[in-house]
Image (cartoon, rainbow, N blue to C red):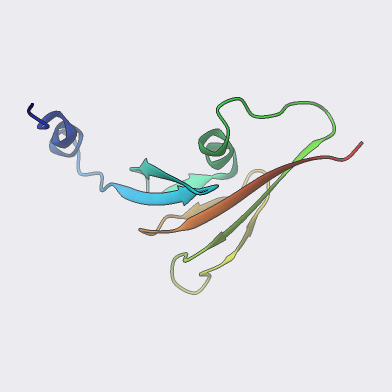
Length: 93
């Protein structure tokens, strides 16, 4: 079996692949930054929805002068190889 298709993406563009961990599962991303909404999409196949659902995202092993912290809706964070994200959904009702 030939695995050359895995390299096709890199050949088409100059995007680097980063392996990150979201809720204990490895994910591959190619962007240099990731948004709050994109992290939620990686964390949940079917994200909980509703007016009372609040997502909390924390990260560690991050880039540069902010290696750990949290994200709120609308924010992005620079990706670093091996970065770890924890996403929780809370029902505030």
